[in-house]
Amino acid sequence: MMVKTRLIFTLYTVYGILFKAMATKGKARGASGQYPLVQNLTVTEGGTANLTCRVEYNDNTSLQWSNPAQQTLFFGDKKALRDNRIELVHASWSELTISINDVTLSDEGMYTCSLFTMPVRTAKAYLTVLGVPEKPQINGLLNPALEGDHITLTCITQGSKPAADLRWFRNEKEIKGAKEVNASGKTFTVQSSLQLHVDRNDDGVAYTCKVDHVALTAKPQQATEVLEVHYAPQVEIIHSLAVPQEGQFLKLECVSKGNPLPDPVIWTKDGGELPDLDRMIVEGRELTFTSLNKTDNGTYRCEASNLLGTNSAEYVLFVYDTPTTLPPSTTPPLHPNPADHTVLLGTHASDPALTGDRDPNAVGQHGTDHALIGGVVAVVVFVTLCLIIVLGRYLARHKGTYLTNEAKGADDAPDADTAIINAEGNHAHTEEKKEYFI
Ligand SMILES: *[C@@H]1O[C@H](CO)[C@@H](O)[C@H](O)[C@H]1NC(C)=O
Ligand SMILES: *[C@@H]1O[C@H](CO)[C@@H](O)[C@H](O)[C@H]1NC(C)=O
Ligand SMILES: *[C@@H]1O[C@H](CO)[C@@H](O)[C@H](O)[C@H]1NC(C)=O
Ligand SMILES: *[C@@H]1O[C@H](CO)[C@@H](O)[C@H](O)[C@H]1NC(C)=O
Ligand SMILES: *[C@@H]1O[C@H](CO)[C@@H](O)[C@H](O)[C@H]1NC(C)=O
Ligand SMILES: *[C@@H]1O[C@H](CO)[C@@H](O)[C@H](O)[C@H]1NC(C)=O
Image 1: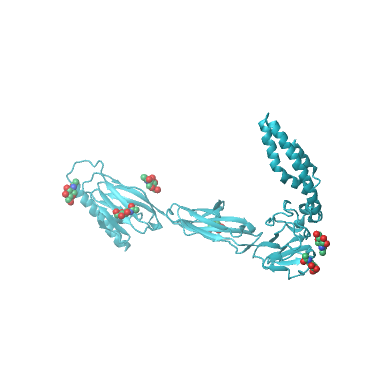
Image 2: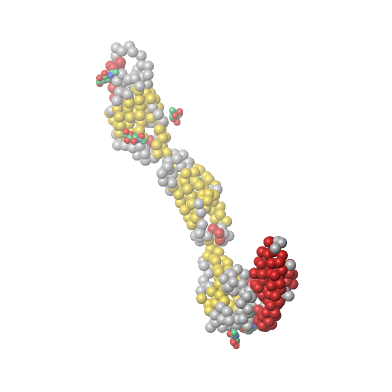
């Protein structure tokens, strides 16, 4: 085969020289501009390389393409090398274009176009073949990893030429890895590694390795791995009432995170089992009291465990009396909005500061007296107001602004008074009021 090719090549070369000799015979004209022109070429592996050789002025002298191994590919429009991938695209006195389909890395090299003048003129075109990087692979993943583990993720891609670049992303955000490039044959193996000290925030995080390469214009190559991290539970108790009173409904929710998810959680009271399962209902992570009783006072603990450990949170319940009489409708609410889901952990749950100056007991017993005193004071104030209004009208003849100010005060008075009465002994308020009316 080789010998045959060589033979054909030699024959064509000889033929070319003879042909040229005949063609130029008797012509005295100089061969200015009669030389071949070619261009370097870069093609991606698997693509098609069109090798074009042009001559500006030509007297029908033959053109020839030969490969880096000096084998003739085409002599004019005649195929010389038996290779199905190589085809003639265009042959004329001014151009010889051939194509190499399905280019491989071994096609790379210096191709020669020869014009068989005397002497032979040549032009060299370098064919560069780009190696397409393979889809990257991520190794080193421990699934699941345990919190505190040190792991090294490596991303590797082979077959790139020139060497590819690898980039790491943690949930779309780029992070820096350590790159290493090794040559293997004509292509490169590129590896990038990430050192991770795993914690619970890495649970469910996607690590992506992307390949950047000149041969990857359309379809980016990338690989993604999602990290799973196991960690011990984290527990807190959320309560539905800030000031629990007898007879009320109370819900305690044990919010526990952890991987694997701790399930179920365990509720205890003062270190023992829940005493009254008729009124204390455990459902999933929730403990509900259908109707609070003073005997429910105590420390409630929620405990969650998984393979990695156990954790708990505490809530100290202190049940207040219900007021015996309903306070006047103008009284501010005795307890904050029940929808107040402030998270209180452990022993801080029934912080006395929250409840101290709002003792429902006191309000309950003295409510009636206050109402009586309130009525008397209201009458006195009303009379005073009437006087002020009369006085105000008199003054208004001189100063219009007085009238408006006094009238405003009069409108606000009934509400403000009730407030004074209910918060008995609050002298600051009374003084404020005085200033207001003067
Ligand atoms: C090569 O030439 C063929 C035929 O003219 C053309 O269809 C093709 O697009 C060319 N390829 C390149 C890469 O220039
Ligand atoms: C080239 O050859 C063709 C015929 O093969 C002939 O008609 C033409 O005149 C020739 N051109 C030159 C410049 O010799
Ligand atoms: C073509 O490639 C060769 C080899 O890489 C280089 O020496 C030459 O300068 C290039 N020619 C052009 C025109 O780029
Ligand atoms: C690169 O070569 C070094 C030394 O031969 C070797 O230790 C390393 O594992 C190689 N890396 C890759 C990604 O092949
Ligand atoms: C609280 O419990 C005690 C004893 O179980 C019971 O006698 C009492 O009636 C209960 N109080 C309320 C308000 O349910
Ligand atoms: C529960 O707390 C209340 C305070 O409102 C107190 O009066 C009651 O005696 C306590 N009950 C028990 C059983 O500790």
